[in-house]
Image (cartoon, rainbow, N blue to C red; front, side):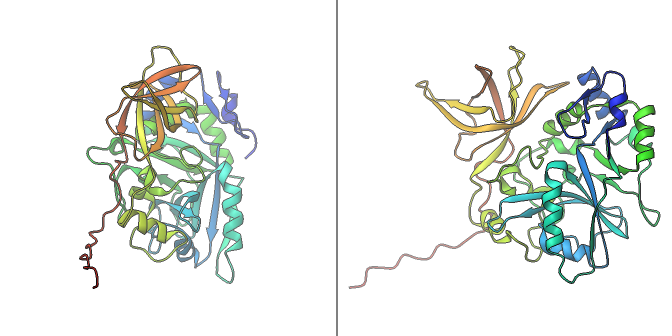
Amino acid sequence: MSRSPFLDRQGAVASDTATGAPLHYGSPLAEQRALEDGRAVVDRSDLVVASIAGADRLSWVNSLSTQLLTGLEPEASTETLFLGPTGRIEHAARLVDDGERLWLILDAGDAEGLLAWLRSMVFMLRVEVEERRDLAVIGAFDGPAAAGIRPVGGSGTEVRWRDPWTTVAVGGHQYHQGEHPAAEYAAELVVVDAAEHARLAADSPVAGLLAWDALRIAAWRPEHGRDTDERSVPHELDWLRSAVHLTKGCYRGQETVAKVHNLGHPPRRLVFLDLDGSDGVLPAPGSDVVVVDEAGVRSVIGAVTSSALHHDAGPVALAVIKRSAPEGAPLVVAAEGLDLAAAQRVVVPATAGATADVPRLPRLGRRR
């Protein structure tokens, strides 16, 4: 898509993405409330749409990625990860099939690399990978605003991706113990054509990317490229709950997924941080997360990956820290020369993994 028509709305403040999807329209907190209540839409021109046509599309992507896709019903939403040989996350995709094509909604920074790799893996299969720059993505939460969006589709179906993060998917696993905030996270992404994109920009109540991100962070929802780096494995982000099927067939990186889940522990873990907002400072991604011991010794244990000002909770963040960091320890986040007090809520516990009951062999006596 070319320049977003949402930038023509009064008060629109552009983001630094290539398409300039608006960050907000002057009232980020009010926009959050409207979005959460299902009364506003968000321009997601920071996302790219692609489609895969052909009879082998589901079985082919199934063989390459972490999610079980064979038998995926039309309009059913899921997501998958593409891992490297050592199990590190390389790409992520939101998926919905319309009965004729498998639609992929991709982060703009990830799309080119993933689509190039997919095309290199086609060989003799009946699939056709196509990037759809003529289409756009609109975000909304379940409610009247989402219902009023007219998606593209085929054979009477709609390309409407409902975020599967709300529950643990079949074949998945949740490391978090206790109530999960994702139960209320009713986010949708809808693929639309240029005419519908322009109509929504002109007529709909709107919210910006800051509103979307704040609600995502509050639901502990990881996002590739924001909460991941070159070392990330799915277990660290509790991403087994929606993007990984633990008993499907082989795929690249499966050995690491199984080994960490059954026998080991992820080396790092995701935490949600309630931040002290007294100084009016919001830490940028990459800000150090620090633990201070009783002697006043400071140790950097990780970094902020996403942060936002939430309309109810105030300043919040997601961070990835060392697994060995004590779960109950008070933390600080170093930002703009200040130490911001941070209360951690455990998303992935330090004991995550090692679910298999492996019998220990008896010790053998020394041979005389």
